[in-house]
Length: 95
Image 1 (cartoon, rainbow, N blue to C red):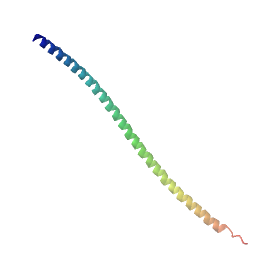
Image 2 (cartoon, rainbow, N blue to C red; image 1 turned 60 degrees about the vertical axis):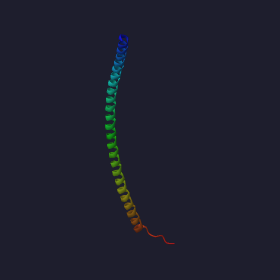
Image 3 (spheres, rainbow, N blue to C red; image 1 turned 90 degrees about the horizontal axis):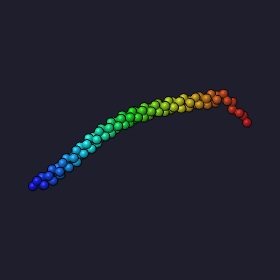
Image 4 (cartoon, one colour; image 1 turned 180 degrees about the vertical axis):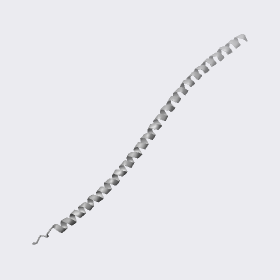
């Protein structure tokens, strides 16, 4: 009976040592997981800033498009005025 108790005690001590190793490894993994969460939060913040910048760039591009459309309209009106003026000043040639 004494041998059986010794064997059981050694087995239990071995299990406790393995359990301690598992606890240590779990603690290390929790620390690493926290670090990864912090990195992920930073990346999400950066992505949100990049998205806002992209939206602002689109808005700026839309304003440039609108301005370009106005300039096209002005240029067309100037061409029309020039053609009209030339029509009034050009003397038709006779044959």
